[in-house]
Image (cartoon, rainbow, N blue to C red; front, side, top):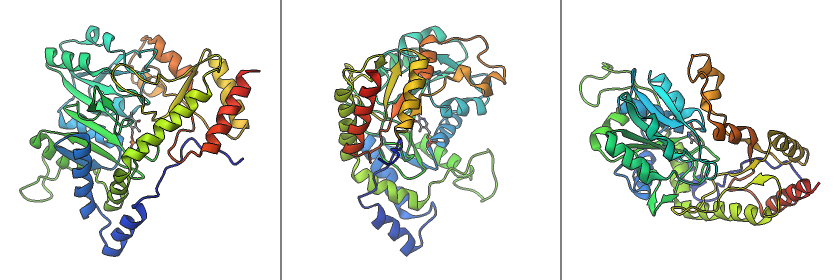
Length: 371
Ligand SMILES: *Cc1c(COP(=O)(O)O)cnc(C)c1O
């Protein structure tokens, strides 16, 4: 058996055709026609008025934070258990992330612990949907309304997932997506900022493009922006991927289901929830949480010997050396998130995973847990 990587993308639709079109027509930069098509079609799919295609999901978050004018003196409430992207956007803007522990069952931010973190400095709540199940949005929306807080929604792992029937990515004042190759649809590298307000949309477009003023003399700037433009070639991939998104979601759920059934009898590990009262797991990745860090380490090593790649779970924001060295989060503890980060890992979960590979992984894991 060849080594099974954690992710292989699926690129067997119109990707090649649309990419060739870019090369044949010479439209390779961000000025090409696929950008607008991809933005409009993805915004339609998610149910937003505007989509602003960008270079990656982390950049989408930088734009979101800056567009909402979050800066020095502001606090942003967010989960400690997440990828660093949303936290780094907040810190780079000069604002302060205020962290919340995780729910032990869904692995998302524990929404019952948000209210106690709200102060007079709180400007926004930044939610991150983790691994396949959405955050319980109703209590978050209520807190935002009651306290006049902005909402940023990092939906980078949630293409097509819904909360009570409404698409993830449609909840935030600004919501963001990533199209990295392990996401449900990919552009190689890429992301999208989603908004409804046309003025906010124009501001995001401006920040994506070095904060050039949309009118007035070119090369005169009143604000610092970023170069986060997406290329027409990336949008070509995105358009082809979007044509297949429903199939991709079905495939992801099938991969999750196969693991769930195959690993039912496994001892010492917590599996992802199949569903909650508001959503069915979309299985961005299939994660396992071991009872102890040692068990996690041993199984990961044994799987590696068996040519099966795994990835550890996210590492908590309050335990990041980069933030500790900046004097942040000193003495803070979030026991549930700490356990997830130490005991959790995920299995190969990409769209290109073959049935044969998935069966091999399941049989190996069962073998390991019985000895
Ligand atoms: C993948 C991911 C990102 C970052 O996206 P990039 O395109 O890799 O910059 C941000 N947030 C979450 C939750 C992600 O899963």
